[in-house]
Length: 207
Image 1 (cartoon, rainbow, N blue to C red):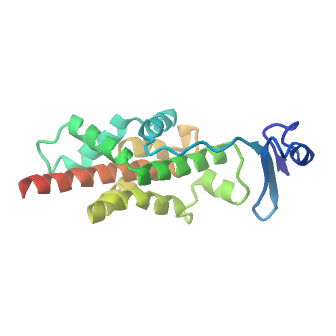
Image 2: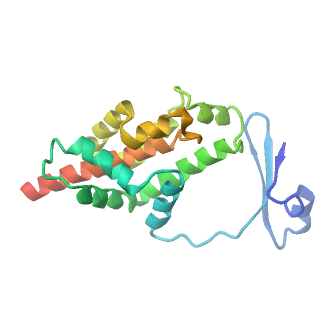
Image 3: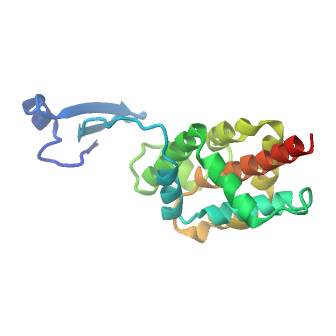
């Protein structure tokens, strides 16, 4: 099976003929040897910050900063009685500004989207489409975000992962119409880290 973005410029023969002008490659993945032959654009310089792009990507998948801030409020309001939604939103944005967070979201959401389109090889595509209970890489990736603010974040993440509050419950609904195997855990992780950040900040102010 060959997957190509442009059959004229991306076939194996075309790739050989235009090797001087195109950065083409062949990638073999999966037990069936899926061959992907495509003309790859030249890589762009990597910037230091992608917060706006991450927020836009989340929005395109149905998740807003406010949705995540509501989770932060739900899990922190009993510990911080004076907590406001503005403070929750600021904390979420601070977490989204971390490169660890951005990298995890870009990677996880890309895998969700590829699974939706059937562009991953079996059995991986089936595991992601069904959110298989024995597939735990989504939780592992989320830990890259959670660990930024220590063990409090891990406790918060476990609670959100089990309770499916707010937007996380909506993302887990099979009627959502999209693959959210990574996204639900990434959103939980951002909320958990933002809540942990507020807890640390409160302690720092008290000290």
